[in-house]
Length: 352
Length: 188
Image (cartoon, rainbow over all chains, first blue to last red; front, side, top):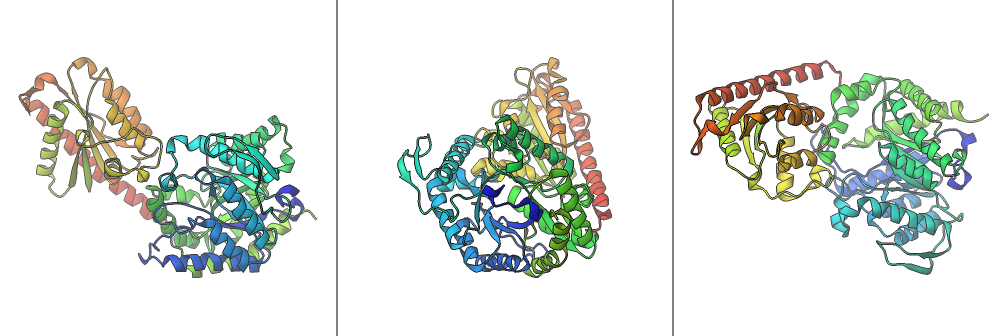
């Protein structure tokens, strides 16, 4: 765990993530400017840092309704604006980037941030990046596996010799600067399907698992599959952290929390994925055994603890800004997280 | 409400004739319904490659988006080699897993032989069910001999099309009421 800068004795880490979506607020129909959205993302990271949230990550998506395509640039700004919080991507679409360049960027951000930077490498669910950055969608899987392997190799080896199909070979290449503490934590982003989790396990990389909605027990199977694959390939699951990522919002009551979030998520998904979020599914999200952490503060604390007991994971990251959520609502969440949620989670999950 | 009338083949004329007739009957009886005729022969469509439908360009984006925005789809299909045509299956493959959730679907089959009667039942309906469509249970099966020149000659086929349209509209209206009533129960 140490290699990935995780200290299990401190309990479950609590983080925030933004996909950098740039969507209208469905209640007003209005969309803030790209500049304001970026300013607010950086401000959100600052506030998160101030209340003691453990991690903040920014994703990249290359299509309409997103604004953090240059997510490493945004992270560099966040590195400068914050002091203690760990920062990372969520995720970096490594398939259509050059791993050398990604490593240079993130090692640099790591130095600027004084050793707080991580990479989460993903494959993208939408594929605007392929045409835009000049890659063939037919190589979707191979590009990802090859480039993730190269990124991991650069992280492990100071002098890199490498040959592959989708990038010019590297001969005695020294990728510099190096991160502050030898290596960066590099995670594999995993969607719903266990097959990607199994690949993460076989490769021996930590797993970032997206858990938007549904029974927690369902996602437990994916986590089990990951740990089984780790063991099969000779790794010790005790050394590899698991993070889960999903929707989050707290209010006075669960009904109020659902009212404040539903249309943001529903219309946001309609615009970015072409399908909304059916109300019956969203309603079930309030169940104590559903992974969706939208509810009253107390209920959400209990759900996070239930998920921790079930998953044995090391980090939960919350998405609370999707779909044009006004900044005032995000600020309220941050206050509640700092005042009520972090103390409760640490009290129950840290080793005495 | 939005209805799409789909001609699910790029060749032959029978399905086009049957679906044009269906569209005429639909718009005559229900002028308030917003209708679109999608004839796959009019579009240049790639094979599905698994991307989100919003990531397609041009014709593929138009065809998939039109279907996704519909409340009901009346699917016209010929039967080739004892199955639905590949271009029609390709449309399904381009759409998300539960693309037809909340939508009503009904079927018109044109076939050269009565031996193909159960193809829609055994091959098309399972696909539509998997994609979570609300299915009109019966379908209209039109045979070669029901056509004369470029028209449907058999009045019985026209009567059956009229009833299929009525059933489709009824199911779409009632289903919408059901969904609205259910959604109204939620407090968000």
